[in-house]
Length: 224
Ligand code: HEM
Image (cartoon, rainbow, N blue to C red; front, side, top):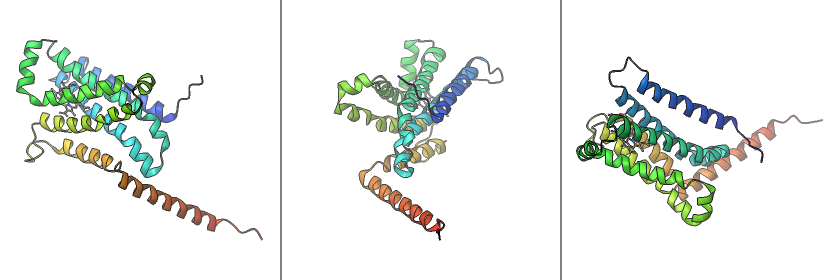
């Protein structure tokens, strides 16, 4: 079997490796930081959200610009989303609370946004485990249905992010700019998947392509 690695895959894997080193450096070597655990938590959470957004951007990029190569990256990006969410979870449970479940129970009760994060993390774990070909075959049509839960995970992550920043999406209090920006981008990416919007985008792309072909043909030199 021939292994074919595209430049885009090299970029994604290198970015994930560098970002992992950054989170580990934050935790153990950044002596200038007053609260390295909190910084590593915040960075890993943000990186997981960025990978989630990139995972959900692949299909819209193909619909809008015909970038088919992005479709092959969906699984890799999804797995990196899970990997950074797992880092984020481990830093909280293992490093910050040293697996002290009695303390963690109090924390879950006092910080309800953590429960929302846990729900999103559980969905991401389920999707990562079932992302392999064996599960695809075993689940058949249900595989696609199950993987639609990524939209629910994305919604939960936005609520978790806004709530963690002590903001409130509805009363527009606190530091909600970041979560609002990610929320709008994710909403746009989901909107493009609606069949009617998708059809309109496809026909617009077709018209633009035809126009480009006809103008390039009219510019061709005439052989006399
Ligand atoms: C798996 C269970 C999860 C737990 C226990 C958890 C816990 C936390 C905690 C305690 C914070 C507050 C950090 C602080 O400012 O002190 C936080 C913030 C955050 N989490 Fe999570 N989280 C979880 C899942 C997720 C997932 C799945 C994502 C994204 C895919 C995520 C993204 C974020 C983001 C973006 C922030 C805000 C970071 C910032 O302040 O800039 N979390 N999380």
